[in-house]
Image (cartoon, helix red, strand yellow):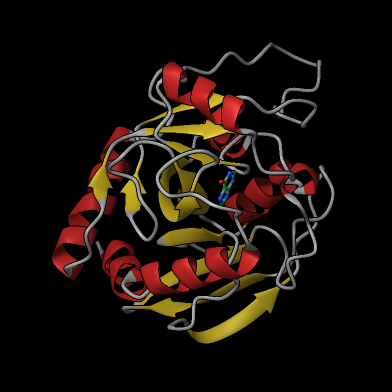
Length: 246
Ligand code: HPA
């Protein structure tokens, strides 16, 4: 079975409402169970798989997500291209709340997560990761966004933090000095694992709030995050349908 596109939904995106003829399928993997069922259906005439990264009831915090099982399940289902939706905080001026961005770089600040499929048997796997997001697939995402009339910033550096707590002002100030534009808790090890599996992988970051100490950030609340994600996600069905077709 071939899947034209797999989508991993982040905080605030637990379903792809436009998906038609949906079947829920449960996959088992050598790495354990994925976050929930894969929802397989049609979008824009193409076969699309959707998986809610945190589970459909948002039961899994970022450091407890089984990233290996999720990607393995998507690959088993026949996916070759994975669009990761990641809810993030914005650090630099252009990346304010409700902005959509397709970053081209990342820095990994996470720790203690299962970050490789290589388990010590066989030949060590040192995949090239200079361009952590598949350049050609990023181009397809940006073209689909343009065709759908959805504004998406091209580029930026995603800093992946451990969570689940939000960052201190000093941590974000350091990330800004490091060159990060965006901060989120789920970008890694997902991107690295996708590369190990040879999947095309790109991130569509949904800015939910200013990161700590940035913009006019006050206390960051879940209500603010969900409201901004909902507003920024309005164009997603058209973008994803175009991407699936293309
Ligand atoms: N920091 C980390 N992860 C996030 C944030 C944030 O400010 N907002 C949404 N996900």
